[in-house]
Length: 326
Image 1 (tube, rainbow, N blue to C red):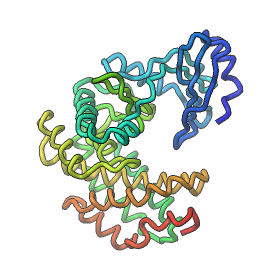
Image 2 (cartoon, rainbow, N blue to C red; image 1 turned 135 degrees about the vertical axis):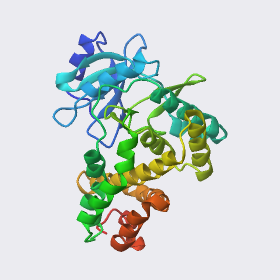
Image 3 (spheres, helix red, strand yellow; image 1 turned 60 degrees about the horizontal axis):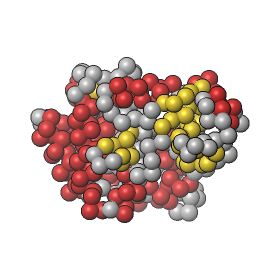
């Protein structure tokens, strides 16, 4: 977490000469974050999104979109898109995941706030971003067969897997004819608690225009935090009660849950195999449990049979053994 070489010059040009730069966080991409503080005590967050691996322009654009519609995204103080540097407003330290670890009694109230943000998001025009196409959904779901299957030494029916997704996702594509902005990583590690009744949003640079159930799945089937099933059900009910969505929406929720969880299993395996980030293997048992719950929905019966035939239960979480080859 050494700051990028151009950071002091960039900060000086933005009026933050001599600011202290301290590591804050990295994530599953090439992006890194640093907290900066100037001599007057002003604090900000430096995003390092190095090209060609990363492009910070979408983050800046979505931040402006969200802020323009009354959401609490970090204000962009300065940017050098050519070199992948962005100075952001610091939204503080009260991240949803850690806050609830110390204040579990607030879990329902905080999740209600997070649900209400998604309800607000569906009520505004979608951002000027690409569509979440069927091809994109399938490309993501294939990460499981491309990365997990070989890591687990499994030979699977890839063609059958893709065909099933193409068929199962057809109603989702039809239902998103009027899309919403899908933030795509809307979960407890990307939500900040600000004041009493405000939520700050982070990590939305990959937003697409798609189905509103996707972000619900991100939140309620969190890859990094156990969300009680009763809470998941209550929050889904809350969303449906306000929006007037019906049973078809529950089916789409299960379909997109299975798609997203299959994708994440593939991504976390890739982070281990390709990038040497073995810690992501510890999340696989949770991801398989979530995927299996989604596959239990009657609409996903063909996909459940595919998994039963191609990925034996005893191989589904077996990669976590000390980060070694399965």
